[in-house]
Amino acid sequence: MEMEMAAPYEPKKNSEIRIFESSDDMATDLAEYISQVSEISVKERGYFTIALSGGYLVNLMRKLCEAPYSKTLDWPKWYVFWADERAVAKNHVESNYKLTKEGFLSKVPILNCHVYSINDHATVEDAATDYEFAIRQLVKIRTIGVSESNDCPKFDLILLGIGSDGHVASLFPKHPALELKDDWVTYITDSPEPPPERITFTLPVINSASNIAIVATGEDKAKALHFAISDSYEGPDALSIPARMVQPTDGKLVWFLDEAAASSLMAKSNDFDHPGF
Image (cartoon, rainbow, N blue to C red; front, side, top):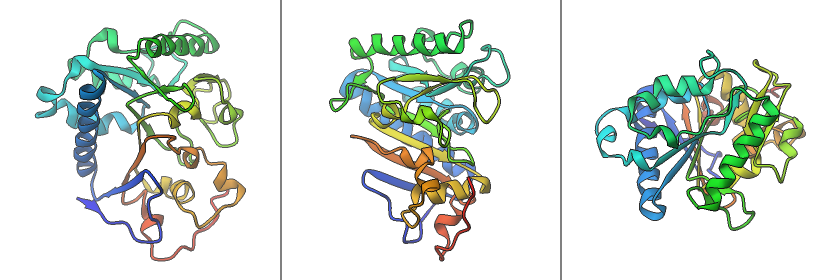
């Protein structure tokens, strides 16, 4: 069941907050949401381009592998990318590709040639360069749309998680990668969470998407979400939270939250301890 959210946390322009009582409710609604975006994109453009992160997100996509979606979605029109990836082998336990392959891709008829994973034999720098090149080629032929405002790729949907520190993709608080304006894909070698080497979409690419969904579960995300969504605190720590910087240029943002993650948003009082990021 989707829950109502207490004031004063009104959704910002072009954004929506959905709160769920259970993982199953969230997975059901997320599947319907992705299905609708897919159907609209295929009808309007002939393709559906989706960029994923790893973690719990893949498990929440499980309903798409079941009826009716398994039979009704136009899977051959799907193109799959990763908004971030760890620079590890594809069969490594920490690979987002491996997680997605086992939990989702192997269960639906998406064409293998439409799945764009990073080159796991290259250095992390070269892997980021190669990934951006592949995306640029697809933008040229308009398989991936293009933003009219900044010429960035305009993915139909970017699906993200959020860390307890407020990071999204592999963009971490106060990291120089947050300042990049011209790169579409970059790399980091100093992730505060292992493994240290990763590739990631930059903020301009994320914010250029037609649709962005951020999924958060667990009480450990509550503080980050408070500062990512709330306007009640404008201090430097809150403003440096990457999730707060996700603001679609010409698209829509939907937050999918369980009750634990949304606990600070649903509270009657605005009082909240400083998270100390």
